[in-house]
Image (cartoon, rainbow, N blue to C red; front, side, top):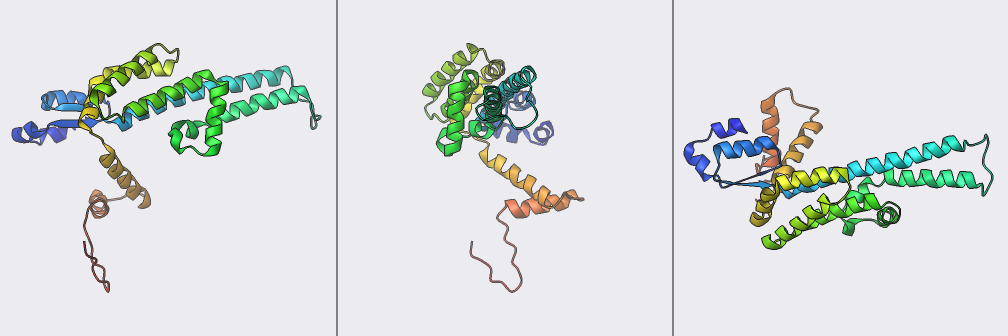
Length: 250
């Protein structure tokens, strides 16, 4: 990014009014050095991604605790050889603890989706977590609160909602979300700028995904110019006429 800025003229630098991206420190440093008068925004997509990473960290912690409980019970009540008898209480307890650990392990996709997009099985999985694991469910709710407040159009309403979220996160005994609280507090103004200006990195992120797919489908490129040519071909409005085919109208 520094090299990009250095290629711009003074007039071009002064024309930059908004810079949006993730919360990387080097982006902010470049903005402050080259375009100090522009507004720095942190893309809401990346903010939700931070919350997803914090939620998944909590999920992994809870799963490790549940699996450790299963391991402990397995050692205290080792299974005998052969198939256990029907109605055996020790086997029932072990199966229930193992099933609980498996449910948590396989809940990442359900916890990551928006509630309105959950399938019936995923809804049941989230309901099980709400009933049996308060810590993980609180982390899930905090992720959802943050996701929803980033959709608010009114800046004052969004600021109030973000302040409430920060207060809630700071008072919860969840290590991953305390770290997320500090990160969001540090970028609070940049997040509010993105909401106020309606800025998003969605288009550039979509283009980046297309470029990654192009490289993957080609199994890599030996020549950088070949890759750039393919990117221009796929990601632009270039229309290459094919032999024996009538050109389509734009």
